[in-house]
Length: 156
Image 1 (tube, rainbow, N blue to C red):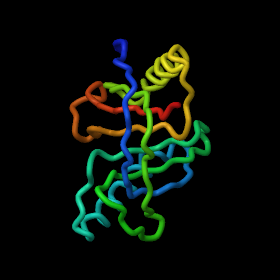
Image 2: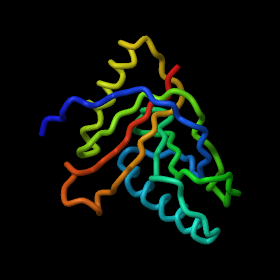
Image 3: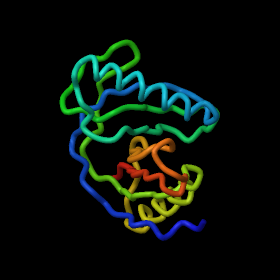
Image 4: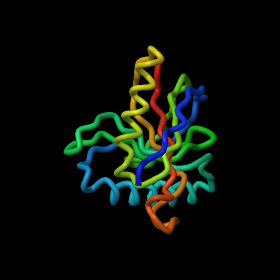
């Protein structure tokens, strides 16, 4: 299936507290690690009687598929004390180039390419990690074509 042209725009990100786990993994182990991290963080938030303030995310600090530096977490209303490798953090305020990608995760490479072309055309520069916010999950949809991921790239 061919991906339709993406609706790419610039938006303002407000300061957002998060509770997350930052770690390293290879691409083969990433799906399991994401699932396990979401489960552990969700359980801890439940113990604290805290609801996430939005959908879960993964921040990618590099693109080395053999040694990905990732931050896996949830946005929360206020700073929450950490527990072990679960740490309070933040998504910094500032400009983000954003798009909604609908389709299988494997197809996001093209979306990133379009976003980087947009950034270059607008004379912007990227800074910080790439954020993927997962608005649904593979076990919630009938087909990977229905997966919805918001991609955000911090820019200046």
